[in-house]
Image 1 (cartoon, rainbow, N blue to C red):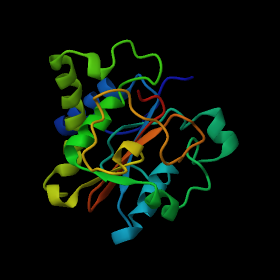
Image 2: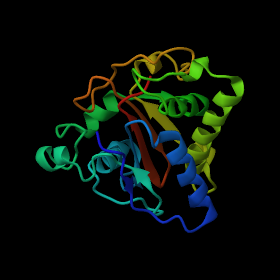
Image 3: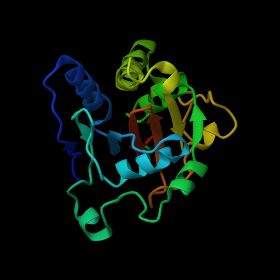
Length: 211
């Protein structure tokens, strides 16, 4: 598998540099898709904005970098612009398969994406408190982008495909190995997604090798 290819973005100011440094440190090694697009649909139509990100139909509104292993891959050229996401995925289908989580759980889920499904030598739940906190802080740094003055804490929501969130908005994503399954948005067996929505941005973090 090729190394992840960052989506072109500007890192001229300290805020974007800090964010992109945390992104690469946390998610550059595993197979993760990370991208942000603008909100262009109000209310319940937010899933259309998420689909636009999955299909690479728009650019990051701030010009910041993302991660996209398949942007220039042969599979994308052969299958279509949405690869690795399913071409037949609809906004209604996406909304139906997502579960809300609170900020703390979203942080831990994003932190968990630094792991591999099968080959992780030191899973997060087995690391020292200091090591775990360092990973969590990178995840917090990424999520702070969507909780600034423009978005506001009350205007930011978090959604996941993880089945652990079917019955609670506060699942423990770091207690043990994550459960796979959930909503199938790709043709991969092992995938988990985190979506962050603000009034102006739709962010997608998708792991294909989470533990």
